[in-house]
Amino acid sequence: MITHRRYLRKRDSEKIKKLIRKKGLTYPAIAELLGKSPATIKNVVNGFTYSYGVAEGIEKLLGKEGLFPYLREKREREELRRKALEEAKKNLAREV
Image 1 (cartoon, rainbow, N blue to C red):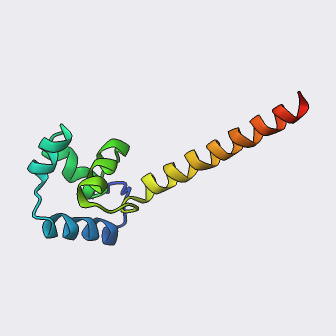
Image 2: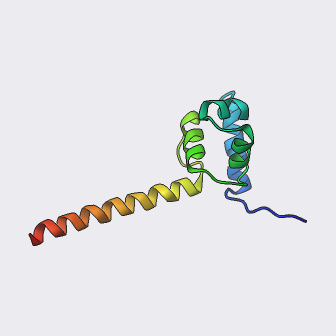
C-alpha cells in the first residue's frame, strides 16, 4: 500500500473543495487563472503537495485567508522575522 504525505488534513481539504464548488470554480478554471496545471491545483487542494503561490492564489480567489495551515505558518514566521528585525534596528539606533 502506498501512502502519501498529506500537507492538509482531509477535513481542511474538503472545506476548500466545498468553497471552490460554492464559488462555481473548477480546477481547470483555477489553473488557468493561476497559470498552473489542473493537476497541480488538485494536488495542492488534496494536500498531496504544497505550493505557497498556488495556496495564496486559491485563498485570494475564494476570498478567504487561513485555508492552508502551512501558508498561515509561513505568514506567522515572516511576521516574527519582521518584528525581530524592527527590534534589532531600534536597539542599534539606541546604541549609536
